[in-house]
Length: 230
Image (tube, rainbow, N blue to C red; front, side, top):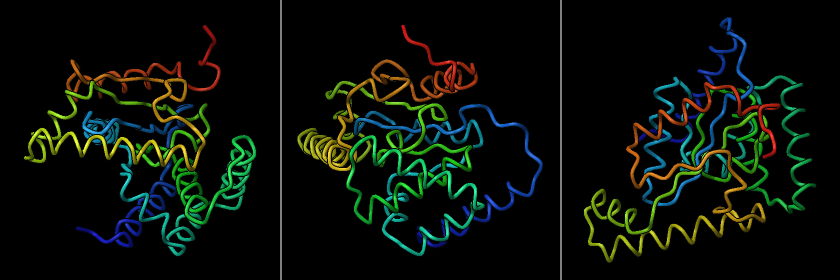
């Protein structure tokens, strides 16, 4: 497995290459965040989306390791120009004020890293509360869910464990994710108002879920003025 330093080094090189190339005008929404119930297939959906759209993929585990390192935090911010850094810092401060957050060192690093990823665009971000960090008008915020019995079955199959052990894994992961979002963002991870699109994988395949999300993004109705009240 690659070290976090190697992963960051490769990502920074990709951003530098993209910055030098002539690019087309980006759509209003060029970042997808994936929040998911454990065992719902959210990781596979995120991976499928990144492959289909040729977006960079950032897993929860990678983001967590990046946020723990001050040197990585600095390296990622250095990929932005002064205007980009200022925009990220201003957005973070407005978020802190609006949600009455008291960010510790870890959250500050996490917010800056996810903010920088969002500024670069063309990314799928899985977990770590990214949907609470990035500007909603520039982000497609997806929540992948499924009934618990389905998720337990998936975990038992994928990890070759009994249903009893799978149930414990699912409950523990649910609790950890709920606690993380509650602690750092004062929010309920399961509240649908925090998302633009809810995907239930009970009857949808991973490929079908990917196509639905991709279609929603391509429609161009989810960014900025496209969001209208009912």
